[in-house]
Length: 231
Image 1: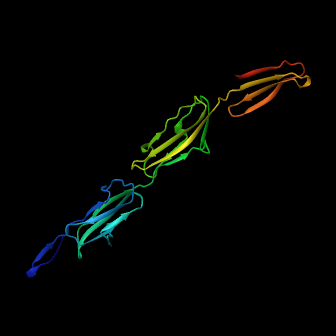
Image 2 (image 1 turned 30 degrees about the vertical axis):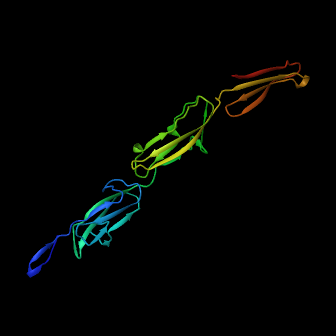
């Protein structure tokens, strides 16, 4: 409120209504935005508006402004004016987060996008990725995981992690889990006759590959085949 000259030398008050600051997404001051937004300034009788990010320096003339830079708290100050007469400033707290949580493979367990486990081995899906966010604390990030059948059945399976921050930004990452045959020694024995070429060989499967060794050789062995067994 500033007084100005009136008719007959009297002084009449000139009242400039303070600005109303509104965002195009209808989100109010101090609440989070997840995309760029525009702040508009209106008043019942003002003819111009000025804004600034310091209350002592409100000198940029605009009636709207596009907000695109991320921040967890930044104040903007706006005053409405009629010629040189201005209202008291009004503020709006800007909070903008456009970035989804980061989901990073834990390379202690994940190699080239694959976790390798043995049949019936214990596991913890939470160990395979690290999730963080620029503004939301880890405890407040909502994480969901697609179903996993477990390690009881040999095969390769996909697990998808989805992380959502407090603002609603989401990201997803899929890893593969390969379940191999158990790390026990699976044995195949083969015997053959043929004089000096008679032999017994022992074949071991360690969960990923076979190896063999001769455990008996010599003449007059009896030919026999033994199926794969669990040693």
